[in-house]
Image 1: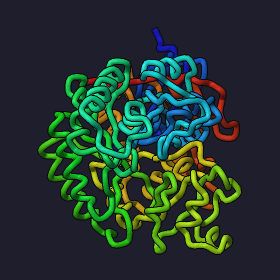
Image 2: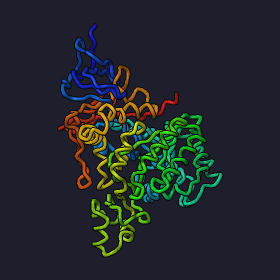
Image 3: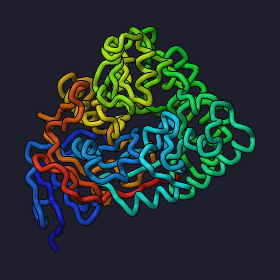
Image 4: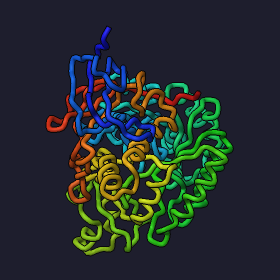
Length: 485
């Protein structure tokens, strides 16, 4: 009997997510799974797409996001992801997760927790958050981790700018164990930030202990990505080794002008460490980062753009230096006046960005912040930028390598079963794109721009985005978790 599918994409150039050479072929989809890959000339489908000249790849996995709230906020909030081919997002990074974040109505949590928790959502447990994700599905799949800063705020209240006491550590450890049992896939820290920087290495190890039995992962925005970047890598590796779990370094970079070029050193350290323990990292393809505005960490030699401000929303998208001149004050005083606020900081060197991206250990994550008024362009352009600028135009890596870093490698490291590859039986998370045209359009001046060349995107076999039409309104995303085997 001839194969009958719901969808067949014919004669496309297939990038299967493994890094293997591209090949021309067909892909058939039935329900939420890939039914067949190869020559499907004898098969038929309810819908057939001729993919001649187009590329078909697994849906992109955004390895580092702050989409905790966005996945609960309706499809339009995630147009920035679907329009660039992303079908799975990893939330709960940098020690900041929406659960178990409980907050009094009208009370804003301390930064950077307000990146995801300023909208009235309150979850007493990870199970409540997981239930909300299932009840209000998004266009993307959600892979969630639990944040240390969130736990400290939950357990220590406003008195969190100090090391935790033994009883507090025990309570946080219990919350981690409960979250892992309820569907979380790991535990993250943001030791760079004030609500987390007072945590000792020993506190982190103790709180992270449940990861061992649950087969979870340890993720970190390290204590320092500037002068002490290597010492921070060593601390990260120590934590992973003590707990006995894989280590994930978030948005690896060498920050501030005096550290430009040190990626040669950091990558050699990571490479050597990888022979002794499981370690990997994500990165975004831009020489600027973005987070909450921190006046005490400003420097006159580093450009800053305001992304949002509660008291002065009119300055979103403006250079901080320009705002300071207008107010006739220095940048630190202007920043204090803007708080609470967010910022883009031009703190990296392009050569380091390219070296870190090209290294075999890297995968791609946007680190986008979806609720900023004037977001970093990485929110809308990360994945097409890697494909278009760094692969096709600059030849930094082959398109096979680029797709692998966005799909199969990420899925394998995170333990995402049947994701990130084109093969029979895998979930039908797919992106059809034009390999000759794909390119980001989002800029620092005009960041909310859909990319070129993304033709159609499917999550779990259902179309969520089409070029020229936008979002379809479908919301087939699921909560997925790490497979410990």
